[in-house]
Every structure is written in structure tokens, then in C-alpha cells.
Image (cartoon, rainbow over all chains, first blue to last red):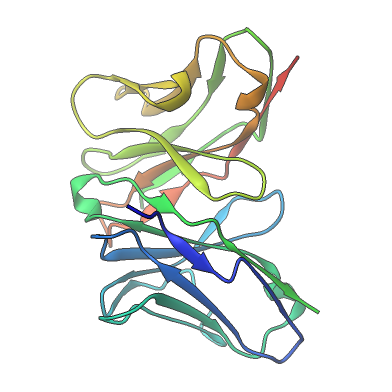
Length: 115
Length: 114
């Protein structure tokens, strides 16, 4: 059973370009979370999705950022018109229903560098 | 609002000594509590969780944690630290009063000195 997959592992973009980060959850998991981490810092929650629905996007900037988790295919975190401050590691996690006390499983992360 | 606090940014311990990484929580209702570890340039790995039952929870790599309801704490412990335990440790709680997202502490860097 493959773990959480994220691609690409490293992404370099120039200012103003778009970044698309992909996350395939563990098999059987329909709950996906995105986090951002700066070097030597903690995790910042961005968004929580369940198949085709955004459950909580309270941590995601209102502009330039969007996320989706379609019925088929991976979850996508999209950053439009990237700026240098978007450079960070972005982690995806998946779980069974959290109401059951399920733990999250994390992917290896995508390291975004904005030049 | 539900929250979790890790009061120490860094903990240093000598190899072979016991280690404790502290975590306190604030929740309404029964807490679902977790510990994760992050090694450099890696994603977080699940160590252990408390949902219900025995207050002492055993997890991966010899770690354990004690749930203390009166002190609202869930400290991570290991009887004998290894240099390879050096990493970033995160405590987390599920927001059962809201959207059921996971709330993470700010992390504690553990350094085990040889």
C-alpha cells in the first residue's frame, strides 16, 4: 500500500508564474490536508478537503491560492503569480475520517523555490 | 478554541539519558492527541496517539506518552535517548469542536548529544 505521494518533489518558478502541486492520498483515504513549512519553522495549516469539498480553508491566503480534490485524481494546490515569499516546503497529508481519531499520513513534501 | 502548546523550542539531552518533550492542550470535550516526528527534509511521521483508554500510550521507536487529564498534558517520553532521535517533534490535537482539522503545536527540536 503506497503512502502519500507528492509531486514534484522540487519545483522552481520565476516570479509571476503558476505553481501546481499534486498530492495522491493513501489508498482508501478521502480526507486531505495541505500545510506549509518554512525552514526551521513549524507547520502552518492551509486547507482541509474531502472528496470534491473544501471543509476548512481558514489557513489559505484569499488571493492567488486555491485547492481542489476532485472525485477522480490527485488533490491540487495551485499558487498563481508566485512571489518570493511563497518559497517553502508544502506538505500534504491524508487520513481516514478524523472523527474516529485517525492519524494523518504525510507525503515527502514539495519544495517550491521562487526565483 | 482548541489548541496545543509546546513550551520548549529545543530540548537537549545526553545519549542514554531519559528524554521528555512537553505538550499541553486545550480542548472542549475528549481530546484526540498525537505525536509526530520530522527528520530533515522529510515529511512528518506518526509516532503515537491517545484516543481513549490507558493513559500511557506506547508508540514507534521506543517512545511513549502519558495522557494527564488533570494537567491537560500529553508529554512524550523515552527511557534512553539515542543520537538518532535528534529531530523535530510535533504534538497535535483534532479540533473536535470545529471542522475536525488537526491542530499542530509549534514543534520542539530535540538534540541528543553523544
